[in-house]
Length: 490
Image 1 (cartoon, rainbow, N blue to C red):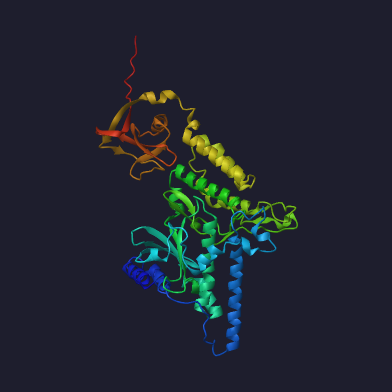
Image 2: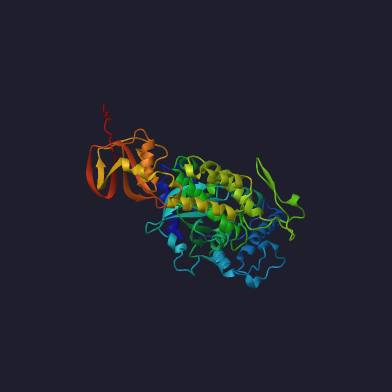
């Protein structure tokens, strides 16, 4: 697809000024994306045909081993009967979804008209390199219609590719080998569809004008997300941090009983996640595993972490009970809950958050119990039931002016706030906003704008003073009443 290659190279060159180092990786990879038929080189290695044959045989062996990793993932939905995919002694080919495999290997997926294929990438424009790792390069591009998507492709300058070429002396064969991670990820994205898993928009195998899928030229097309920024998240309101943790628990609940069985995320790091419109999504699945750990005694079922070890029971069937699920829970605790949940949790939730921290940090709760605890907090937070102790009379100290806004505000800052320039917090009602205003020495008024957060709570803007009122049909202004001086009678 020459047009696509030229367009992407041109876009990369235009971005060179601001992406000089990263775009060099993009150009290197994309220049090799297009034409090419997979074959082992006919050239001899330093004239030694015997050594070449040995290297080719070793590479073919590695290719077959990668294929064996993917085959268990191709079982058609419904053919489980309670068995783990990795416990079957014999694989019955009649139950394998070879249509999916053929689409991955030999072309783009055309069975679903809403999915993107190689033609969707014509005239795309590169925006930036989102990341590069040992195996893959992730690039943000705008398609011809302007829609942004993320592309994953083999990182030609990555460590995996370099090591393979060094070992086997066959760049095209190595591209095929390294691309198996991308192919595995396509299968997993098809099998593990969930609101908290990045959406697979399509893929392109090879070039539309040639024998597609050969030579490892696979590009995965994904919805565009924003990398999870933990530092920025730590400075966000508790409500947003809670959302990330809740989304993660909902994902882990799904993975514990997925169509593939219980799935463990072996590379569990914040960098494996992105946010799409505030929703957390897992974006890297190539290191996900549904393999059950076999055992003879409980000692074979040890989960080892840097500062803690846990021993789980060995079942009568000879597998470690709940090991994948427990691994996920503890990683969620140490990478997410520890940093995001306790700090500045609403006072009414402190004991509930402490319970979650203790039960997940000690692996005393399974994923069902953990999800139930999170959903309970969400219910209380959205309904305002945790505010029952606030006196109803608290709002009587304020004069309300409906259909009005303010101008000439004297702002003050609070933390964490939805605005860096002032104090904007989420509240369940005017009563909670009045309680917050009373707790801030600078606050003399607040406005409810009608804007809402993801939980349906209102955004309230707090200020020290304002110069005058202005008509605003969506807002309500609450001004603290000034108490007159007390008088005494003789």
